[in-house]
Every structure is written in C-alpha cells, then in structure tokens.
Image 1 (spheres, rainbow, N blue to C red):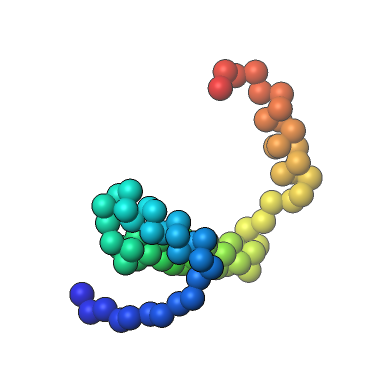
Image 2 (cartoon, rainbow, N blue to C red):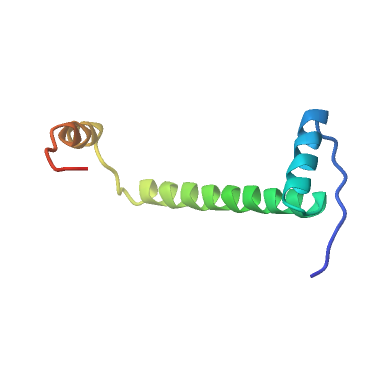
Length: 83
C-alpha cells in the first residue's frame, strides 16, 4: 500500500497517552495512530452516508409524524415484556 507522511501537532498529554498505549500493546506509535485515524475516518464516512440516506428519505416523503413517534416511545414504557 502506498503511504503518505502526515505531520500533526497534538497536546502533550495526548502524545503521552499514545506512547503509553503503544508500549502497553508492544506496538509502534504509528500503528496506534493509524488505527485511531482509520476508525475515525470510517465512522465519519458512515455518518455522512447515513445522513445522506436520511435526507433522501425526507426528499421522498418517507417521514414519521412527531405525534406518532411520541406515541411509539410512550408505548415502550408500557411494554411488560422482560428485557
């Protein structure tokens, strides 16, 4: 895989936390930061996709009235089934 070097300044406590995590897991700082950035980027991509999906539903008129949603939520409180 092709790579690119990024340079970033982080607060000292965060850098120290990354150092501790890397040492505790016997991993490099690079791998810890790479994993964290990958998880963040994936989460942000998923959030955007879900937002666009929701907006498409609104555009298509697939909506639920507030009163219907409130009634559904209220019905959850009255549910006697075991959890």
